Image 1 (cartoon, rainbow, N blue to C red):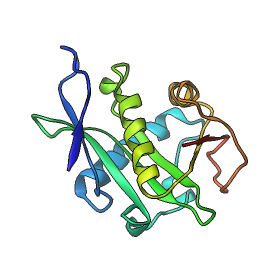
Image 2 (cartoon, rainbow, N blue to C red):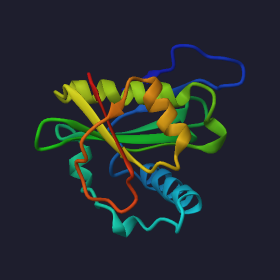
Image 3 (tube, helix red, strand yellow):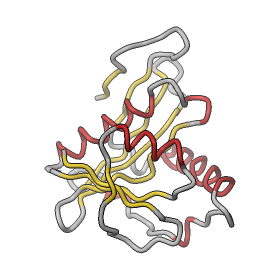
Image 4 (spheres, rainbow, N blue to C red):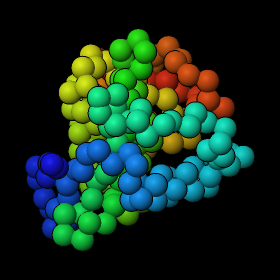
Length: 167
């Protein structure tokens, strides 16, 4: 069961959100692309082994979810993101990523809204995320969507910014 994007332009093909993808091969490939981009963009590179390895069950209902953003016609994965319920009841937004050529078309905001909706459906009243300050486009997206600085909630050598938003 997916949702389709509300408005289509000629430059953006119709897309849909597919839920429940934590253990899928397509999710693994999307995360691999995301990690490769982080390795290029972060000073000193990126090693996913230095970050928390999340069990797929933690991003599978009822504890969380992992979404893929795909082109409707071709099924090409354009982006991904996960949510998981933290012990304090907040919902963490994790690994949100868009393919480079999918950026600047409103798809990031569309994916973010879908992730926030999943967080609400999981019972979350607040969503939190952590990010590296060099990912300026993502930080701008989050700020424009109402995210503000919040208390650190994890140890991660790559994280320099913690943001949160009441749902």
